[in-house]
Image (cartoon, rainbow, N blue to C red; front, side, top):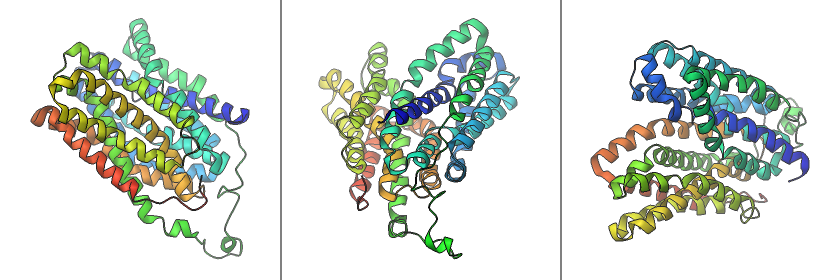
Length: 400
C-alpha cells in the first residue's frame, strides 16, 4: 500500500481496535463485577450484550448509505460520540433496566461504527483499490482482544468496573473521535458521490449496471455465507473451551489450545495480505470457508486417540479461516459488485449475520448441552453449505 493508504488504514485500524475492545471484548472481563454490583447474574449481563447485537443488526444499511453519501469522516466521528455515551451510561447504571438501556445505546454505536462502516469509508475513498487498506485495518484490529482484555482488567483493578467503562468512554473522545475525524475527505472517482449515471444527469431515474441487475442472487448468497460464518465464529468464540473439554481435553489444555484462535486469525489475515493478495477474493473466501468444516470433520471422525494432535489443528484452521473471512466481508462484495453503492449494499448483506451473531451463543449452548461435542456436526454442516454457496458464485468480469 502507498504511504497515504497505510496511514488511513492505521488510523481506522486503531479506532476499530478501540471500538472492539470496548464493546465485544468488554463483558468477558467486567461481566462478573457488573453482575455483583448491580444485583443481577452474569447471564443477565450477557443478555444485555446480546440486546446490543440485536439493536445493531438493522443499522448497517442506513449507516452504509450515509457513508456513501457523506463519507466516513462525517459519520464515524458521530459513532465515537455514541460509543462514549453508551459507555458513560454503562458506568452510571444502577440496575437491570439501566444496564439494558446502556447496552442498547452501545448497540446503536456497534451497528454504525464497526468493520462494515470502516470498510465503507475506505471504499468511498479508494474505490476498487481498497483491498489492501481493508486488510490493513483487520490486521491492526485483530489485536483488539490482546489490547482490550488487559486494559479493561488494569482499569478495573485501579478504578473498578465503572471506572473502566468511563476510561473507555474517555478513550473514544480523546483518541477515537480525532482519528475518525482525520480520515481523508477526497472521494474516489468511481464513488457514487461523484459518478451519477447518465440517466440521472439527464433528469431520468437511475439506471443500474448489468452486474447490479444480475447481482440479487449473488447478494442473497453472500448474505447467507456471512450469516453462517458469523454464527460459527460467535459460537466458537463463546463456547470453544467448553467444546474442547466435552471432546475430552482437560480444562487447562482446552483453554491453552482455544487461545490459539487469536494468533491464527492474524496469521490468516497476513496470508491474505501476502500469499493471497493477487488471488480473487472469491477464491480466498472459498479456501477460508472450507477451513472450519474440514477441521471439524477431522476432529469428529478421528476420535480420542488423535485428539491431542487434532484439537490444535482444528482451532488454528478455524481461526485462520475466520480471519480471512473477516477480510472477505469487505473485499468480496467490492469485487463482485464494484464500488457503486457499496456501503448500503454491504449493510444489507451483513444484516442477517448480525442476527445470527446474536443468536449463536444461546443456540449453540443448547446444542452442546444436548449432544456434547457432537454439536460440532452442526457447524461443520453449516460450513459446507457456505462453501457450496461460494462455489456457486462467479467473479464479476474485470474485477480484481
